[in-house]
Length: 282
Image 1 (cartoon, rainbow, N blue to C red):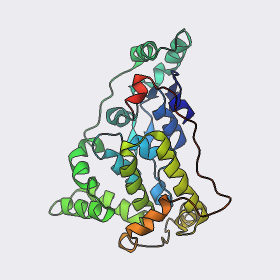
Image 2 (image 1 turned 135 degrees about the vertical axis):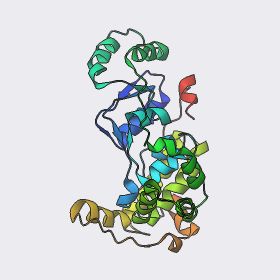
Image 3 (image 1 turned 135 degrees about the horizontal axis):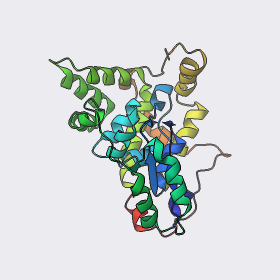
Image 4 (image 1 turned 90 degrees about the vertical axis):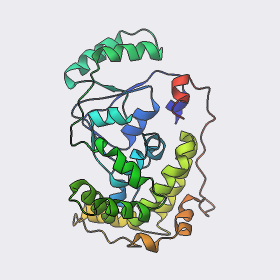
């Protein structure tokens, strides 16, 4: 949050596997450089949690409803796909990273245009493979634009009728294996923060996480940790077990303040004046 407020030129270079906090850090900074071996994924809905640490904020800014698809399914994106959808600003081959670092160390200004110009000298335009999920944008927009999780899954199943499509069937199975509570929470969150700044997004995320960790309404996160990380049977018993058993009012509770005398809502510092490139992200 503090980085998003400052008039600083910060380069986030994410290598190997980019998950959760490092991707959030990348998005609120000036330049995010990825490389050919980069893999991005936020599979929290399979764990009974939801993509947090600002994920709803930056995923909601992706083209169309690609953010809904990535956040709900935990889809894995490579460096080329990250650049194409806007999760990264530059694509730098691994062989050039050390040269880029040396060049940046010689830059004597924090001017974002100067920094970006240096990165551009080492950047390339990667090739997006023919089987990339980014080429499925029409189907993603058609299905993941639905107002509810039930509607999204129904649209995917309708899209698959009469044809053998491995991607659609795999997507449906992934969603049906995830925590119904997590899916509905994240869908509502990403829709709410699409027109909000990073601050309000973090406040909502904090409330939701507090409710999840308290386990008042559901213990899906603890069950997900058991099934995926501890016992590793990969067979979590979600409660409720089906999307239709979770009402809108049930989801509403996660977005409310906690009724606990010792609990305090997240307090963020006031925003400073933002430069043009940061305002454009809001």
